[in-house]
Length: 178
Image (cartoon, rainbow, N blue to C red; front, side, top):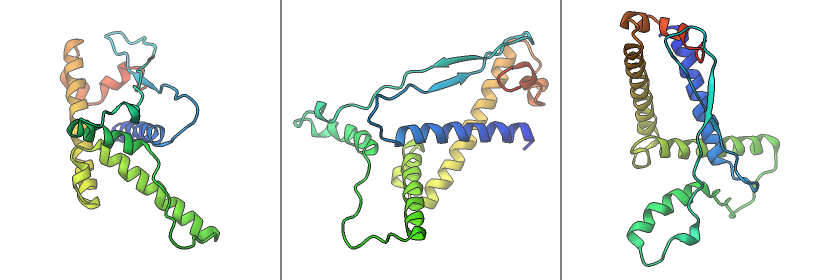
């Protein structure tokens, strides 16, 4: 894997991590709409990047779920329960030593990100942690191959040679990747 692909993969992972952090963090203020950068690639080499914002729909309110429809309400419970912060345990004393506090916070962050990853990976909630992480790796590889296929299709639409795109020359013509 060359450096350009690694940088793109790290950038994509960073964007996903930011989106997960945005979705996982409860806030009392109205949510801001995250902006998703979209590359604007055309046949010319003098390009300016465009940024478009995609609205993120708010989660459905818990009171809007009717009690009579238990089969359909199960679908909404998963999305509402995922956005609610988990209750802290109440049994026993909690150590206030800095090392224990830091370890507890680290475990909470890991478990929050694992729950978010379970929601993103198809079938992730039905798997144990190791299997879910393996499935996440396979899913990211699938997404990467899908992006490469879309890049090849875009190159074909713009009249570029396929070997230019495969060699990484496509990124020099797209200001988003420059």
